Image (tube, rainbow, N blue to C red; front, side):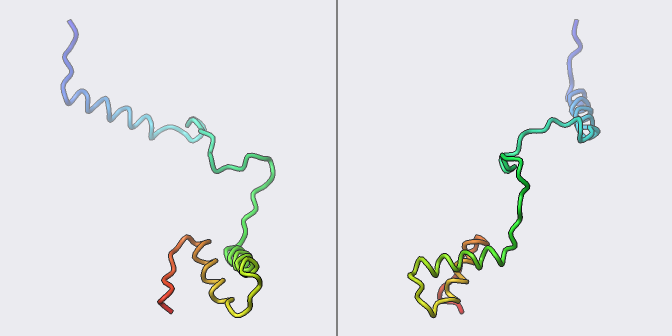
Length: 92
């Protein structure tokens, strides 16, 4: 007849399974393909955040018809878009 499992037996078995997972080496862990990895063999190029903001601010300037005098507004809008933050237009 089979031995009846107790809570202590189950707890011990779970502990052993967790220890086995922790002891695994990185090369033993199954690697899942990353969705963020580039799909081509080209190296990833990181663009400094200031350059990204500058480029976006210039795009906003051009979209507005190259109307001068709103460079700070363009910069702040671009900064908010790039950094993903919300700007409070009334706070200055």
